[in-house]
Length: 417
Image (cartoon, rainbow, N blue to C red; front, side, top):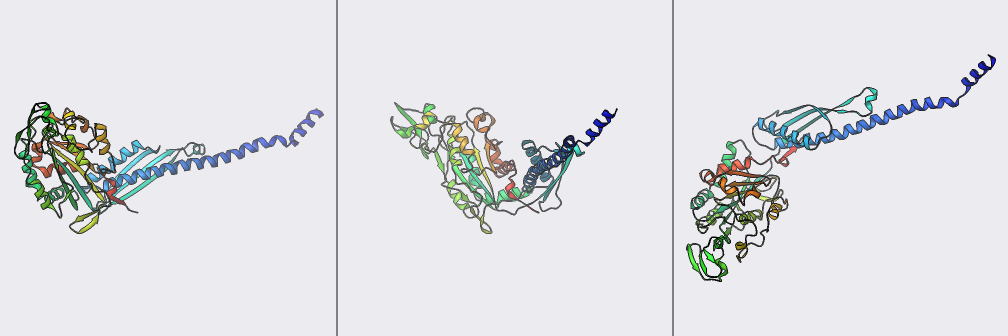
């Protein structure tokens, strides 16, 4: 009995064994502190990502100078798409988009929560996160560049007449249509017409034989005989006629009128035509870039929003790239890529064409878009705008339809505090 009491007294006096429980208690505190810090760091990072998505969404919505319901819809659609693509790992509880005034201002309020990894030990299973972003439409200088690819082969005189009829009044008619739809008008509009025919189709159509010669189109004299061996027997004599640059509709509408006035339908006579070569020439245009100085009714200004539109009118299919007869034509453009991939690379090159608000509006019969045009119809921002006759009856209206298909370019807005 005495021996047992002695051992119990000795055990209670021993200090070595007390370190472990003290250490455990201390480590729980240290781990808790670091765990909460990690959770808060994760929450802060997720909130920053959510804030960026919200900022971009309201900027997208506010840049659309349309009705308030459209701004709310665009903001919400942009937010949903961006959240799906770049999820910050949050549980979204509510999203509210409002337009408090008629000045184009858009506000988005988001409530979310982030599940905690360690702080839940202390009873905090999630952390609430709230984000608000406001954007007001900027009064920037809006520029529309339109490169017009116009089929000028036989039977297309009605299209040429329509282009001529619209030349002088294009700028005011276009802005009038835009204002009628509650869209912010353009401060500057520039047009570059490009008339195309065929670089080498006549050989394939049997009109010309390399060995024996034949007949070719010689504008404005129609089909004329040419001897064998004449290199210019390939295709139409005027395979393409392109304006050297854009005509500024504020200062040089008369220049556009002068350029298009003498154009007459000629050539062709077979199908397809050299449509891709015209598309290439359009992409090679000197497009306005954001920051460039442009002429407006209020004087020179720097472009802040640029819409780049290729409008294409044709009733025929196109030759595929590297068409053998076309390549034999001494006037064949050296800038023309030899495959679809090269053409697409130009279309997607931001140093060539501003990407934010680009669109390729095709006016052509459905039946002509099932062969060599098919790869182009898959391009980003391609729009089948209608038949050729649609452009004839309402050229300006149909172009505005195409412009309305452009996704919102949120660089057109500015954030506000």
